[in-house]
Image 1 (cartoon, helix red, strand yellow):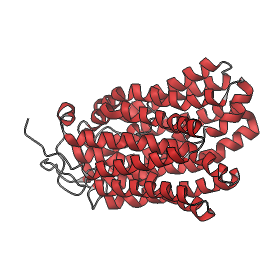
Image 2 (tube, one colour):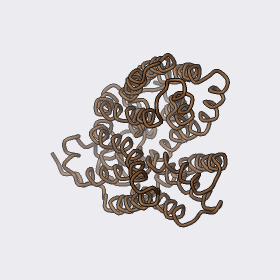
Image 3 (cartoon, rainbow, N blue to C red):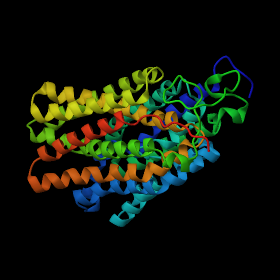
Image 4 (spheres, rainbow, N blue to C red):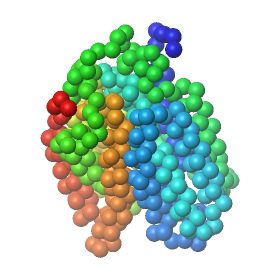
Length: 415
């Protein structure tokens, strides 16, 4: 590939940002809009359809180990389009489903493709291969595409459901996904800069690799997956993210009924979620430059603290200011956290096997995504209130922040 004044890695960032946007066609955040029409048409209960996202998450957990290794070995150029085609076919299948088992099988298939995995492996791993010093900024741009999709597609899906019904909405969404996530990676994405005669960050020459715990240092040492498993940093990070996933996903699902039960009408609560999405976008774009200058764990702690403060605020106030203020804090925490997760594993363990290393932790990470919402729902059913569950979530967030503060970069020992 001939040299250009603009590093080709930024082209890949732009391409994957657009792909990130398109992933919301699968109704990652807007599945709740399909609940009422699907349950009414298919004759199933709310509890039954509520298991669909959990099945999707567990399916992703089963596949993420393989997906991570494939990203390291083959890259995302073919993997994303292939996963998008299978996912789109499953979405068309959903439009024709009439039995509960059909719906659950199709959601499991969507999860197994790995395209909608909550850890965003297919988007962030390719970028970590192309950037070291500017990794935070690069991933923040890609994550911003995901955030924009989270704002746009709920509105689009509601319009489609009202206009052509929920079955037609799945078909149109499948076409949107294929129209974006198939051609763009095929045309623009490449596995590593070395594959096309370049170096990370657009450097003129490769530099010696050495350990680093912070963006802006020398090119990091790439740990072998087995060696990474023997570091305390791997397990501290893994435990922290499991705690966060368990609480954050549960809060995302149950914040709406919590505020409605506090006396706010659903439309007002939905408005607070729009503010949540805007804060996500702003935070994800802003945090990238910060990650290029300060240790990533400090940024991670800040994001967790924002979410913990939001939980404390919503438990101690029923005002309109609290409704919108907690939405902003959640958005800031979610936006910064999404970028941090894409950066921290490569920063600590290098870019060579980052997909495999993240894949090893993936099943626990994605399982915690699926367990959190029903666990908080169970506590509510047993106690008749969200208060005990939300205070438990606050405690888990504090524990996650404490663990993150102890997650120092591992020191490389010669193998």
